[in-house]
Length: 462
Image 1: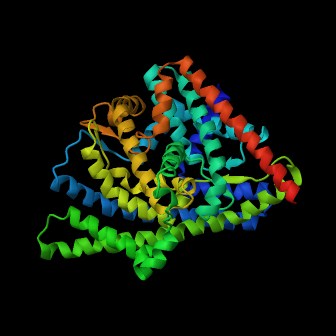
Image 2 (image 1 turned 180 degrees about the horizontal axis):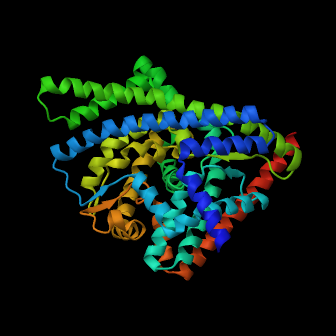
Image 3 (image 1 turned 90 degrees about the vertical axis):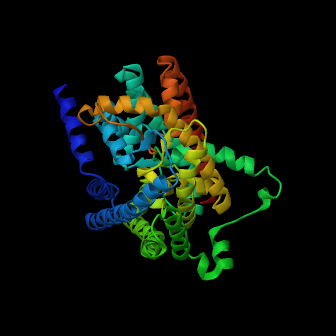
C-alpha cells in the first residue's frame, strides 16, 4: 500500500505541473527513448511547451473577450436558465480531486501500454493531463453507484473506446486537418465522432445537399480577401458585438470593433501556435517511424496522441466555432426542457469541431450542420446530468461545492454524450459495465483487425 501511495503521489505531482511543463518533459523523454537524441528531443519538447503556452494565451484571449459579450447577450435578451456552465477548468479539478482521479494516470498508462503490445491501438497517448476526461466519467459513476471499483472500471473502458476512435480518425486527421502522424485520444473531442458520422451519413442521403461540397478553400477563392480567416473572424466578432451591445451607438463603436479585431486575431494566432506544436513533434514522430519499421512488422503506423488543441487552428474549426457561439446561446433558450446556459466553455467550441472535420471530409457546411446537431445533443445530456454533476463536485471538493449557491453544469465534460451514455449504463451497475466492456472489447478487436490489414497493405506496397 505504501508503494502504491508513492506511485500515486508521483503521478499527482506530474499532473499538477500542467500541460505547459508536463508535455515538454514527456516529449523530451519519449524522443530520447525512441532514439531521436537528447538535443533534438529537448528542442522538440520545449517547442511543444511554447506552443501550448501560446494556445493557452490565445484561448484565454478568446474566452476573456467572449465572456463579457455573452453576459451582455444574456442580460439584453433576458435569458434565464438555472444551470450556468462553469467551464472545463473546474470540471478537470473535480475529476482529479475525486478518488477515481487519484488513480487515473497510472491506470491510463498501463491501458495504453497493454493496447500497444496487443496491437489494439496505434496511439501512444502522451496527453496525460487530459486523462481527466476519463476520471470525470468514472467519478460520475462512482457518485451515482457509491462504488469506487465501478468508477475505475468505467473510466478504463472510456479510455479504451476513445483510443479506438482516435486511431480510426487519425488518417482523416492527416488528410483533412493537415495533422499527419498524430491522433486525438481526447475524451471530449472524440466523443462527438459517432454522432457526426450518423448525421453526415444522413446528409449524404439528402438530394442536392449530397452533391454540394463547401470547403474553406472554395469559400476563400470566391470571396477573395473577404474569405480569409482574419477577415471572417473580424466580421463574426463584430456581429457578436452588435448582438451583445447595450450601449448608445457612439459608445458602442470601440468595444464592438475591438471584439471584431480580437476575433480576427484569434483566427490568425491559433493556427500559428498549433503549427509550433507540430514542429516540436517532428523529431519524435520521425524517430517513432524508424523504430516501427525496424521492430514492428505487424504495425503499419504509430500515432502520437495529443490534446485536441493542435487541431483548433483549422479554418473550418474556427469559423464553425465562431458561428456556433452565438447560435448555442439561442439554442439553449429555444430548446424545450434545456437547463444549461453555455458560458465559460464557449471558448472550447473549436474542440467540438476538430474531429467532425475528417468525418465530413473537410466540408464546411456539413461540419457546421453536424456541429449544430452535436450541440443540441450536448445541451440535453448536460441538462440530464446537472444534479449528478453537482453531487459529484460536492463529494470531490466539498470545501468549494458543498454549499454552492446555485445550480451549475459544464459543456466540457458535463455535457459530453459519451460520458452521459456511460453514466446511464453505469447506473445499472455491473450489468451496465458488462455491456460497456463488450462494446469496448469488440471495438478494440475491430481496431486490431484494421491495424493488421493496413500494415499488410503498407508492406505489400513497400
